[in-house]
Image (cartoon, rainbow, N blue to C red; front, side, top):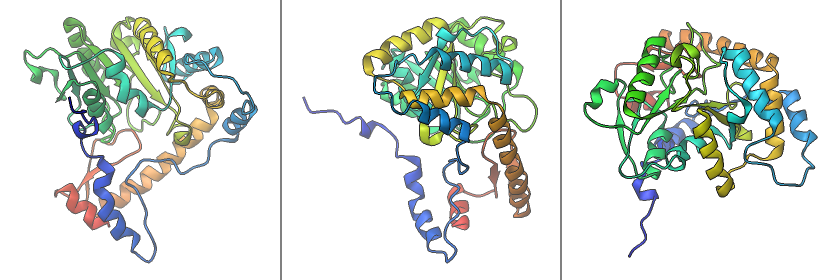
Amino acid sequence: MPRISVAKALPDFPWDSLESAKAKALAHPGGIVNLSVGTPVDPVAPIIQEALAAVAAVPGYPTTHGTEELRVAAVESLKRRYGIAGIHPVSVLPAIGTKELIAWLPSLLGLGSDDLVVIPELAYPTYEVGALLAGARVIRADGLNRLGPEAASLIFVNSPSNPTGKVLGLEHLRKVVDWARRRGALVVSDECYLGLTWEGEALSILDERVNDGDLTGLLAVHSLSKTSNLASYRAGFVTGDPVLVAELLEVRKHAGMMVPLPIQSAMTAALSDDEHENEQRERYRRRRDILLAAVRGAGFTVDDSEAGLYIWATRGESCRDTVEWFA
């Protein structure tokens, strides 16, 4: 039987489609201002660098579950920064960046060809990739009523949204949780931009107002890439339903999916210190204010963009035409 190529089942890598525009922009005398990928440009805070260096000489294997100090720091940061209570440190699992985690979650949770994964209509590409890697089917839907009689196994929620910056309200999140529980579906909430909310309040799926104090079937994914400038460190974690986290831990132990100890130390420092995070959020806020005015002044209409690292704007034309205009 011929070998089946996994790569052929996946969509084209999105950023590859921008190469021609990138080459055109690079030809400008002043060079390129590359806004195609949301990557941090500010240095990692000294307190985090010092924590990394402090254990750089340790030679042994790290644990997949992470140090207790890291897991406690994660729980305390969720409560302190977002008002999320009721999480036990044993239910925190560090990840080698949240992209890796999201890409493998459907597979690690045992989904396959008989399963349906629901993702937002405008979505971070890795949700779809994760479902396809597991062999599952994918439906894009912002309203669950659109599924009709379809039985979903997993629902990806993303609030604040990447890329639109839209924030889902309390009632919307409650309806998602209720819908999923009545049908036996899991809910995975990507909350990587929760700490970068500019207008109103963004809620976690783990907030008691959303789930009535019951974490069953719920997982929340958190990243330190943007809020702490740790994109190069690959640092994130997942928490929520203790049963699901324990299941993920067991599989990831077998697969050797472990965060290096120096990174765990850096994460602990980042999650324990709010000062650097507050400073970074204000940097982004100032840049956002400047860019919003510039984009609107250039004739763009801005939609959503209540949170996150991006501004969702249009000139009322194909996005490819806009990319060429920028280039």
